[in-house]
Length: 372
Image 1 (cartoon, rainbow, N blue to C red):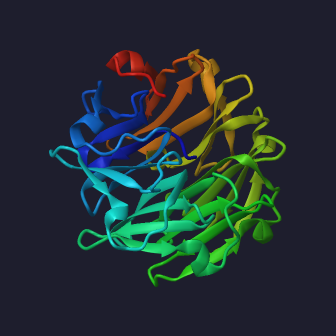
Image 2 (tube, rainbow, N blue to C red):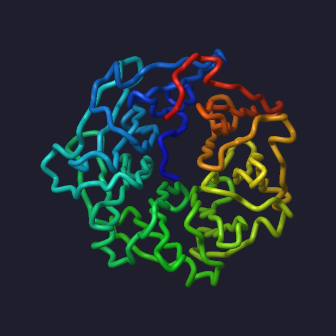
């Protein structure tokens, strides 16, 4: 989900990262490494770059480029540019205005922005919504300029009529995927393989699944299971999953009904794989401001529910955003949420394989400024 906070791992550096925007329109980064202590830094001060009001962020690591990067844009920015903060290992942050390159990229509307690496091709990608209502892609290799593609125009797909957008690569299928929701509640996938040909699929037509609401959407690959997943909140508040294996057949499941878990509330929902544990997870916030985890291990292959707030006596969680990812070097999974205070704190939930959940108020630990 587009927001002013992102979290991701950088396996090359052995670190886990949280990036967010503060009240002075600076982008800060909180980092944790093998020593297990969070450190905060003001990236805007280090790298420069424009300070955008109400910026949305997208963060990722890029194995082939040996970098981590944070892209950002804002609906308040008149020129519709996308900016990227980049860091190589053991080097300081640098800044680039991607749109200044002569690639003819359409202006961003500042509402939807995601980034990821496509390992099969060795490239990094940014997908965004434009002021023309189209979805657009920026891609770059280790050498050469950025490349631009109008995905909506290329495949003739329906327009994306809300902010719900996800994009990721699937190693097992050697494909990259962009997932979004159209105005009729249908979820659409734009997929491209090594032949560089984009294909469009209406996932609701393929599965006869329940329509999506306009609040939450996530998509990710589960390499251990050999599948790719789309998770969303329906108009009834249930959490639904669409799954595709390497045969290309999509199936549909109501995870709320399968687990008797509480209904989802707001836009705080995400899904991710924990390959170390051979499991996939969906994390969301319910109407009681509790953080819930739905987990399915490869064996026995059944979904189970845990109320993480009740388990760890956590503070109430915001319904606006939740983020989660695997932290590969530490064999851990990591969940990040905001509390409901007027000046919300950023909280980290960490579970290392074979251990117990650990909760950290990262704002308190680092003394970092509050998120906007």
